Image 1 (cartoon, rainbow, N blue to C red):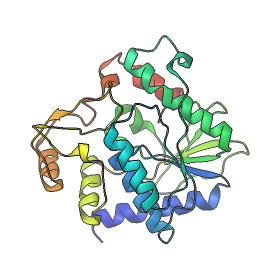
Image 2: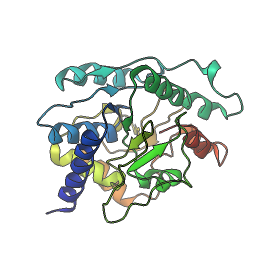
Image 3: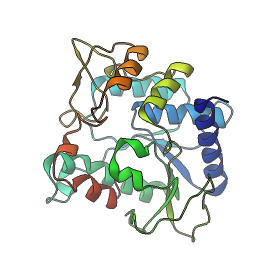
Length: 264
């Protein structure tokens, strides 16, 4: 078994365990590379289909290429797509820095989805290696009634033994990609020939390494126009994956404040 086979097997086990445990399960689909891998794994886990709703928390500010990707692959993959608009920025806490405040619309959008559709479990494609606050996460992570995350009160997880026994009414986030790295994701995309938004590939000397919304996400200088070139670039770089995300350059605690309040 290769390392990728091991990661794939672990993620499929987590997805099946979540489907067995939660009565109303949903999956977040940001349309980025990680969530496309997650969709792919779910299709493998459940005989070619995703047996629960897939939610895109839409701010209305995605890139045109991202919306085109959503329209095509929601249909091709037969997804039960929820694409409700997030609440307006006027409803977001005014004390947050500008880019973080814009991103926080997705936190409100998720709370809105939880109330509207009654999800008791939400699958999200975060990874420990992409941001320091996410390194504190669990695979099965309980949240408060309002969706808030207390990183000091999380269940222990050892040797792939996960606690899925939570009190009635607990909302849980499930993270099947938590152990993957950025380069694992790209090697799996290469192996499985998984479609991704074309903005990840260099054009005129620039590409997006982490894909967010227009106005708060910037491209990086790059000549990597193929998956092979992206992998080679990642093997050589020391720059963080989220270097193009504006909110990661704001107040030091801005991202943790977002996550505590319910952000992915």
